[in-house]
Amino acid sequence: MDNRAGEMDVFVLAAELKSFSAAGRKLGLSPSAVSKLVTRIEDRLGARLLVRTTRRLELTPEGEVYLGRARRILAEIAETERIVAAGARVVPRGPLRVNASVGFGERYILPLAPAFLSLYPEIELDLTLTDGVIDVIGERADVAIRSGPLRDSSLKARKLLESREVVVAAPAYLDRAGTPRHPDELVAHNCLRFNFRRSMEGWPFLSGDGKAVAVREVSGNMLVSSGAILRQLCLDGLGIGRIGRFHVEEDIAAGTLVPLLEDYNPGEVEVVHAVFAGHEHLAARIRAFIDFLAGNI
Image (cartoon, rainbow, N blue to C red; front, side):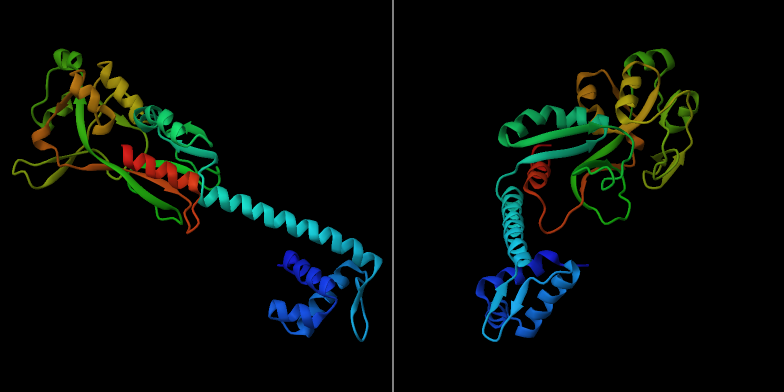
């Protein structure tokens, strides 16, 4: 791939110093290497830019035009890099595209957004809440919030929280259908499930000795795509759901949802990560957002 900015830099220095040797000394190149780079530009343009004499270099009319334009282009590149470097490493600023599940976004990001934007007023938060899994790079998201096991990829991840899975139902449902006291009794209940593939099918429970884990197949009349929807259906008394406790912590505290079969809960956790295309020069706005979430959840 051509390094045209680098070639321009060599040409400008040679033209200003009127010498391949002097330019080479400043750049750590031999005079012949400088001459070849200038010749490469001339061959590409089909125009002579410098006239070589025994004592110095002189610009042709075409060379004068090229020199003026090259100086402006190099100045623009330097200014662009200065601006980007300042924004990336010093002051968090600019648009920040964040993608999160509906449940996590409503439970954590939306309540924290005012404080975050007050702390970083030069950041423009572009938040999308969706329970579909997106291509972080393809969708040009700066940060995506993901629950469950992470797929192997080139993306970086930072753990934000761990939440135990819990089986819950509303008091109204339990009054109507009865309260299961053992996992085997779930066969008689309407169990609400997710319609996407999970790490295991069915619901895991501890066996009677409290050690082995058995996965029980459950069934019901509705499947959903997100924890937020499952929580709402449980609150509405439609059935029993198994969900990350962070979704329903406040509902349990308020008594609007009741945890079930806790003696058989194997303690499986749902891990939530902030996923991003990371490298050593991570933009300040991305780092600030991830640090803020991790410190306030």
